[in-house]
Image 1 (cartoon, one colour):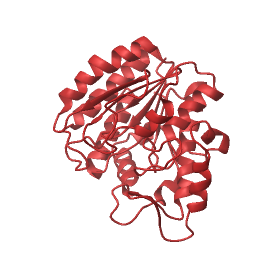
Image 2 (tube, rainbow, N blue to C red):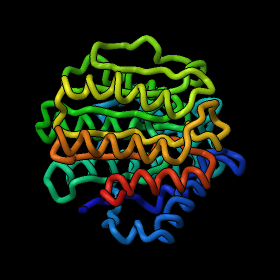
Image 3 (cartoon, rainbow, N blue to C red):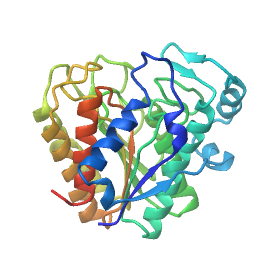
Image 4 (cartoon, one colour):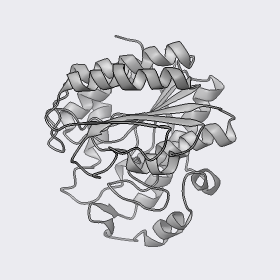
Length: 308
């Protein structure tokens, strides 16, 4: 299986304070486990470029670009919302995180790789067209999706978001776009406290109540996601892969287990093989309990590699 692993050294230099959960150790734990388990040896590692102004402009009001560039500190931290801060390396990391999705989209669309996983920081799915928030600066996946439709000629693409927090930024950017279908699960009554009422006909939002487990995920996928995806018939799948619904992650109150991440990843691969010639671009979003994050990412990648 030809799968690309796309990352960049700048992702390790972006950090928001010593006690912030969205920390460089997240990527260290992932890469260490993938090396230990031999998974990384089965993929080609590519270095993410910086996204260009034109690529970002397809998903964002470019006032955000100029505001973030101007806010970037030469030392210390600058807060952009109560949970989100920039250090001197954040601007560069954010450009490379969005650029990772552009590169992944291109190599998968060309057929160089059947699938790609973007091990990126900062994450992206909370970033709206004009606002950085929720640990996110640019909406990485939305940048990749718009590159697929605007630059590469894809007529229909789908976004699958299984982070425990609703991808409000992705929904805001993509709502009403007839070339995109977004399906998602998230915990209700949790940041960003929206998503239960879809903003467009191209949104299939499935809110899950606190303390529900993997059975609720499986019902959402089989009863809501898959029928919508089959009707839409996407040519490529994008995945906002958040691993913070894990029962060991105290950022939420869902009870997913390792096997639930393996199951949903296999279902995504099965659908892609059925409808999209196997084309998947997946990007890291949340997941803040480092040991469970590393295990779940390994299972996700094993599915992308058709190992299980």
